[in-house]
Structures are given as structure tokens and as C-alpha cells.
Length: 372
Image 1 (cartoon, rainbow, N blue to C red):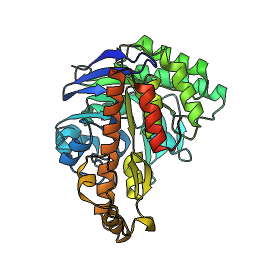
Image 2 (cartoon, one colour):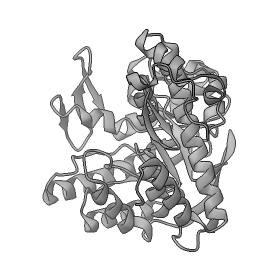
Image 3 (cartoon, rainbow, N blue to C red):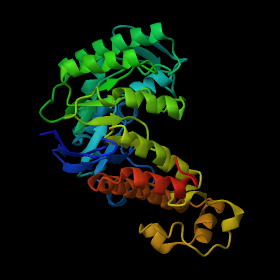
Image 4 (cartoon, helix red, strand yellow):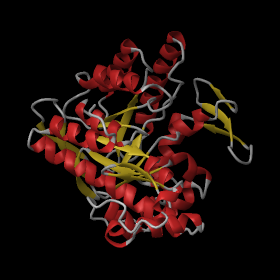
């Protein structure tokens, strides 16, 4: 059922316009996917999620495995039945969360032993376990289990890690029980090393995955380092397969990623910023808790047609945060996700009209007050 079709490459940058075909929807790319870590996009209910997304959202394997348990989710129809979501889903492998527990985990060829991030309980995850859990969770698109080493790891360690990740990908692909229902992506690792990124990519390409994710970025490296990795992979990954940049979703990174051939993005950034009172607008970041907005009767963004910007003043939004009302983070979360949905829609239109570089310049001039 899963398929990807490349529709067009923008004439100046090679940016890709495409379509993802899944059992639960067809989606134009480039696309931003809101993160629903624990079978919920934080603070929003399903009808709101539909309004601020293109219908494809992310769930987290690690967290849903621990709570409530993938068997419980499976009994209720997978994540879709559990949260009553009738559109498409993607799950990560759990690898990033496991490897972020650097002080509490041990890596072996078989898998990773680690401690529960709250209870301290000893746990073990193999590539086969990650795939089994994701089979139970029932997403349309699932990920191979990979090691996500620090970006600044030395070459020798990174090489060993890439080779192990390749072996784990092979084991996970063999363990996949629903290849006709769930697309499986391989994850390209290798840190800043071009040779290792190419080695990782080619090893996964030889296994013929349904798509290819780029991991190990947005983990503390500079923007230049991230973009160099994407440049190195742009002409290596297969044109007729989707490309997913994991955990990346600021406006500048989305635009720069698209220019470098990326089709899919996700990030917790828009909802995390919202919980702290920071809104993305066409004129840059607005910190709504600032006193300057105390009696500001203007809307959050007069270039946005979301229901938040059609209804509420900055003064009211600031009041909600200062009064510690839950509605404040809800409304800014809604707006920030709608903003990124609109951004990717505009990017797709710019690709269609071969005007992406002009769009980038105009957007950056307004959002960052400087051309980039």
C-alpha cells in the first residue's frame, strides 16, 4: 500500500515535490509532522490536530512501550484505535530515547540494556523488539532500530556504530511482520563524517528499505555541520524513495532541509516553545509573556488565518500565561503547528513555481530580519 512518487524537482535547488501514499491518507511532501509522543499531540485533541497538520503525525515507541504498553495499545487497534485517530501515523524506533540515557545504558551486539528513566527498572531492547513493538503500535511508517551516537564521537567509534546500526537494520527488516501494512525506513548515521554517512546510506540502500531517514542531527551540532551532512547525502539517497530528517523542525531548518532534498520533518519544538509562551509568527518569534503585550489589542500574527489569530489579542494571550491558565499553551501550540503547516504548504507552492530561493529570502527577511 505504501508508495512515494516524486512529482517535480525545483529548477534552482533540486528541492523535491512528492506524494506519500499510505493506507490512511495521501500526503504531499515536503511535510511537517506534529509529534504525538504519548499518543497525543500535547494539549490538543484530534479535531484540532487535523486542523494544524496535513494528517500525518508521529508517535514514540519508547514511551508507548513503557506506558501503557504496546500490548495494551495493540488490543485497542494500535495507536489509531487507542487515541481515536483516523489518519496516518509514523513511529520512531525508540533508539534516540534509549541512547539519550547515556549514563544508564550498555550497548552490546545483541541490543541495549538500560534503566527506565523514572523507575530505574532494568530493561533491554533488541532491533527485533523495536520492530515488534512498532508492529503492535500499528503505524503506517516505522523505523529501524539504530544507535544514535554523539555527533562529536571520534571516527573509530562512529565507524563501529555505523556498522552495528547496519547489522541491526538487517535484523529488524527480517523481523518485520507487516511489510504489506507498514513501511519500514532505514536510518542513516555517521555523524559529521562524509565517508561514514555514505557507507551507512549505501548499506541501507542495498537492503532496499521503503524510505530513508537521516538521524544523529539536531543533537548539538552547528547549523553548518547539519547542512554539510545533508549536502553530502543529497545525491546519494535514491530519488524514488522518501527522505526523512528526524527531529528537525525550526523554520530555517525546514527550508534549508528542503533545499537539500528532504521530504519529511518532525520536531517537538513548536509545542515545547508554546508551553513557554513563545510563538512563531511571520515577523519572527513573539514571547507573549513580555510586558510590552500587556495591553496590546493586536492579534498574534495578522498574516495567519488560524482560529487563534482570528480570535484573540496578544493582551489576552499574555494574560492566560501570567494567570497560569492551561488555555494559553493550548492556543500557542495550535498556532505554532498551524504556522509550520502553512510554511510547508508555501514551500510546496514555491517548488511548483520554481521560486523557492525567492521565497526563502523573503521569509528570512521577515522572520529573522536578515537575508540568509
